[in-house]
Image 1 (cartoon, rainbow, N blue to C red):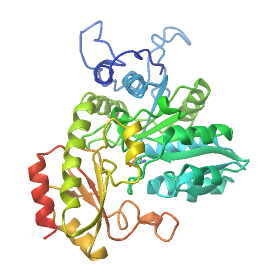
Image 2 (cartoon, helix red, strand yellow):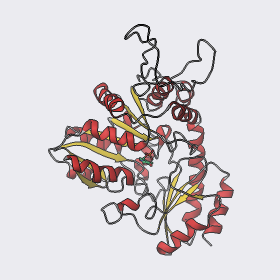
Image 3 (tube, protein in one colour):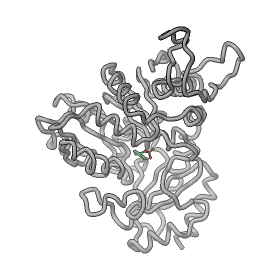
Image 4 (cartoon, rainbow, N blue to C red):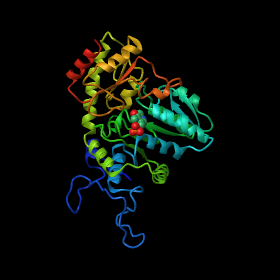
Amino acid sequence: MSNEYTSQGFTTKAVHAGYDPDPATGAVNVPVYASSTFAQDGVGGLRSGFEYARTGNPTRTALEANLAAIESGRFGRAFASGMAASDCALRATLRPGDHLVIPNDAYGGTFRLIDKVLTQWGVDYSVAPVSDPDAVAAAIRPTTKLVWAETPTNPLLNIADIGALADIAHRAGAKLVVDNTFASPYLQQPLELGADIVLHSTTKYIGGHSDVVGGALITDDAELDAAFGFLQNGAGAVPGPFDAFLTLRGIKTLALRMDRHSSNAEHVAEFLTRHRAIDRVIYPGLPEHPGHLVASKQMRRYGGMVSVLLRGGKQAALDFCARTSIFTLAESLGGVESLIEHPGAMTHASTAGSLLEVPDNLVRLSVGIEDSADLLADLDQALR
Ligand SMILES: *Cc1c(COP(=O)(O)O)cnc(C)c1O
C-alpha cells in the first residue's frame, strides 16, 4: 500500500495514516472487515479494489498504509508473523546459488529459517558480527545478494551502523534488510539511513500489548514491493482483519510507549550496573557500550531491552529468572508488561552448538511501562 503522509510528524502519522473517518458512519477507527470475499458489480467489477481477503482486506490495507507511513517508506506489507515477513523477504530476494550475510547474533528463528530451510534450496550464508562493518565487507562474495542486519541485535544488543552496511551491500550489488523490531520505527528509521527493506515482528513493540502476532515489510522500491505482494498473495501468510485492527490500535500509542520503555530501561540499566550480582549490563544507552556512539547517531533513544551477564554463571541466571514477580518469565518482548527470560534455554535454544550460541549466564529483560521504582525493587529482591 502506497504512502502519502511523508511530511507529518511521527505520532500524527501513527494516529491517522491509512484511515479517514468512514464517510457513511463517521467511525473514527477502521472496522474489522470480517469478510473473506467482496461482491462484484458484474464480472471483474470490483467496487473498491477488493476481491478476496488473502489478496487484500480493507482492515489490512489500512494497517499497511500506516506501517509504510511510520517507517517513512512508500510501501508496506503486513504478514501473519515476523517469521512470515522474513520468509517473504528472503524468498523475494534470493535464488538458488545466491549467498547472504547474517548477523552472528541474529534472532534465533531467523537463523533457523536460513540454516535449516533456505540452505535446502541452494542458498548459502555466512555469519558476521554486524557491529563490525569490515567483517561484514569481508564476508561478501560475488554471489551475495542480501545483507541481513538487526540493530540492536537480539539478545546481545549489538549495534550495526546502518549507513555503513548499506554502502557495503550496495557496492556489492546486494540489498540491505534491517530487522527493526527492537528499535521500532519511532526510535530508528532504517530506510532513511540507506536500508532497502525494513522488517518487523509487529508482535513486539508495534503491537505492544502482547495480544497479537504479526510481521511487516516496508520498502521504497516498487519492484521489491511487487515481489513481496506476489508472495504475500501467492504463499498466503496474511494477518486476519482482527489482527490488523489490534496492531493498528497498538501503533497509535507507539511513541508514548517507546519513550516510557526507554526511560524505564535507562533506570534498570543504571541500577543493575551498580549491582554486585551482575557481571555486565548490556544496554546501548550506557556510554561503555561499544555501539553507544553509533546508536546515538541513528536512534532517537535506546529502547526497552536490557541484557545482563550474571556473576554466578548459568545457575544464577536461572535463579534470577525464577524469582522475579513483576517481570514475568516468558518469551517475546515489547509489550507493556515487563518480561524476563534466559535466551540460552528459551528464545535462542535453537542456536546451541552453532556460531550463534549465546552465553549461559545471559538474562534478557524486556522492560515494560510499569512504575520504575517497582521494577527496580523487583529486580533487587530477585537478585538477593
Ligand atoms: C520475534 C522476532 C522475530 C520473529 O517474529 P514473530 O512475530 O515471532 O514471528 C524476528 N526478529 C526479531 C528481532 C524478533 O524479536
